[in-house]
Image 1: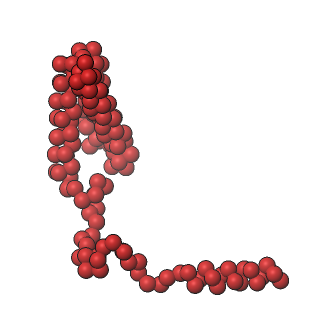
Image 2: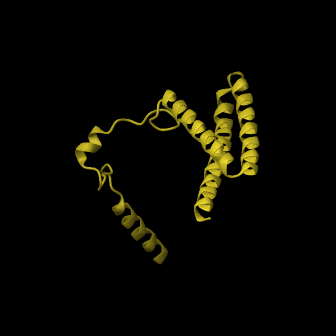
Image 3: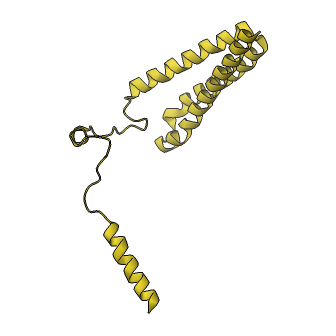
Length: 139
């Protein structure tokens, strides 16, 4: 009997906590909520495909420039990162050649891996360049 009472009280308390009104933001004023545009259908948020490709190209160019700067500070590091850069570039080129021949579900599955390889290498290049510049400033 006590279990039934506890269950009944729990149900009453839990249903009392439910709100049937639409959620409201405490940060955004009501007028701005009504004017918010709908989300874009792209996977990357609101960037159109051309802007996304442009951003990727800019990112790759910046990465290459940073790699070239490493050459002035440490030739061995430059050669190591250049070999990785070229290998990833070759893999990306190979993927782009077959991309149109495979299904879009496979492209959506595999493409992030290729993008990650590039981003991760560029992060390591940027990190090493920062270390080299700090080291040069400290000596």
